[in-house]
Amino acid sequence: MQSGGIPRIWLYLPERQGMLHGNPVMDKDNLQVLKELLDAKASFYNQPSFIETDPIAVPHLFTSKADKEVSGFLVANIAWGNRQSILNSGMRLMKLMDYRPAAFILGFSEKDLFPFKGFVHRTFNEFDLLCFLYSLRNIYEHYGGLEAVICKGAGPARDLRQGIIHLHKVFFEVNHLERTRKHLANPATGSAAKRINMFLRWMVRHDENGVDLGIWKQFRASDLFCPLDVHSGRVARQLGLLGRPQNDWKAVEELTQVLRLLDPADPVRYDYALFGMGVYEKGRF
Image (tube, rainbow, N blue to C red; front, side, top):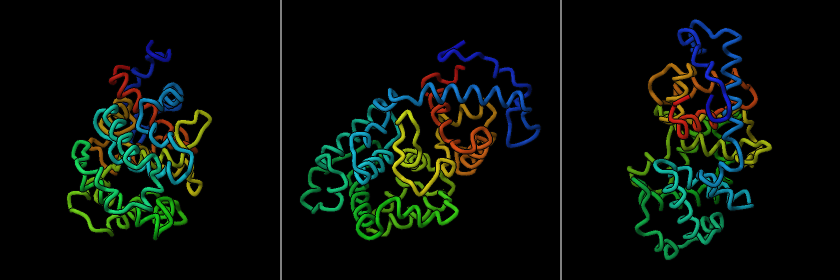
């Protein structure tokens, strides 16, 4: 037994028949065992207590849709490395924006940017941040906001891959350094786009536990792609959910397709299970 009281029965899946994407396909009984495990782990980690130690704590500071979007987008895009460091950097940004991120984006002048000088989070520096601020202003002034941009790209099929690609195109209409392009992932280049998929999870998903914000109504939870990083990827492979060795967009599609078999309506809720098992349990399950 381990945290959450889940038995270790899933370790005995014969010859990795968990490879749902290939052959042989997991039989019905083993599939049910895996689903029960992931359901339990998702419920265990998808709790209000998760918020305070996660970057999602930053958009949870706010009540307005625009403030949640802007703050969430900024903190999601610096969400790599130590989680406390991410939170510290996100909170610093909100303080510099007087805790009114949407109003700041629409109203800042050059003199308002002086306090941002010297900002750095890992490889994301003040010049990258200035591009993000100017780009967000362009998006909210001329395109109706982040949701509108992604909706236009996604089209009637609600294809969020295409939505992210379109966002990337619009985002870099403003003057920018070439180095900044790496800070907004683009699935068209094969990137797993972990941080933007996490942001979309925040914006779209909603359940009774209230961790994700669920403020975008143009998409459904079933449209989302699972955020994929080194932790979730490692666990997904150990459980036989993912065969592709690279953490790239093809792997994101492969993993999400399998998770949709387990829960067609809300496959990305299993992100909590994979992330939690990878970070907190270090794969010792």
